[in-house]
Length: 311
Image 1: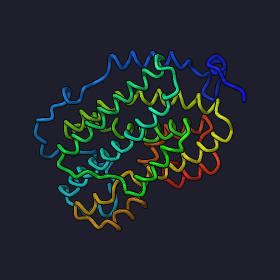
Image 2: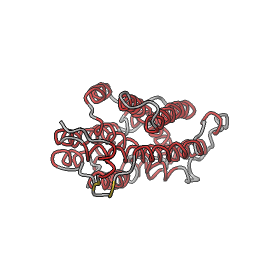
Image 3: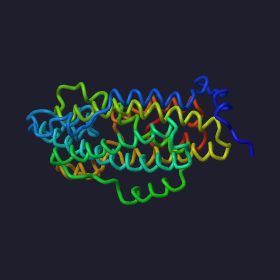
Image 4: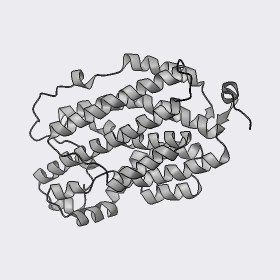
């Protein structure tokens, strides 16, 4: 079996160009972390009261927006649904970040502990710890319940964490980070939204930009150097992760909790052209990238299409 050395990788390229030196990428990310990291407990005013008349999530990003049900709902009920969906998304974010932290620890287990690459991975794990605590505190502050993913998918993630290869781990990481990041970039400058929610999303966007760069660079490296079976497995596992992610994105209990018929709401969200456009727009930067580096092929691509995240 041929071993691919760091020097060999530096000479390789993919459709996006030459691969970058892993240590130099990590060094730049560490420098950025030193300048632009936040302590949410100190940066945000958690004691400020919730502001009347402001949303917990932009209405255009609420799942039922522009559906027949939405048009029958009062403004108060719409805002209440947005509050519950914000809690649902924060719950999803915590679940996903806990998975991510475990995958990152697995990734660096056999790597040189003094390398910049490992130092940055540990820095990212620390970021994700703060993010998870920040999201949990936001759920509590908003007065909404926690919305865990369904037990079946919660346990399915245990299998993912066990069998995931390194490229599969980084592909799944980008799936969880980039779609929510797109939504949060629309949220933090929106003055209709609660100041605390805007503050939380601003911190997350700034710090996640580094995480996305780290995952993209490492996924490119892994796809170029992985054996064929691993690339094929990554395409399938990434497609299945996209399907699960889209199913779990909004917990349908939110509809019951605001007095909307659950079955009718789920059906209208599934049939909503606006919602499909929102989800595909949120995923487009990622799907373009995955397509460029050869991940969206074969059965994996069909799974992405079935998820509704790929046109």
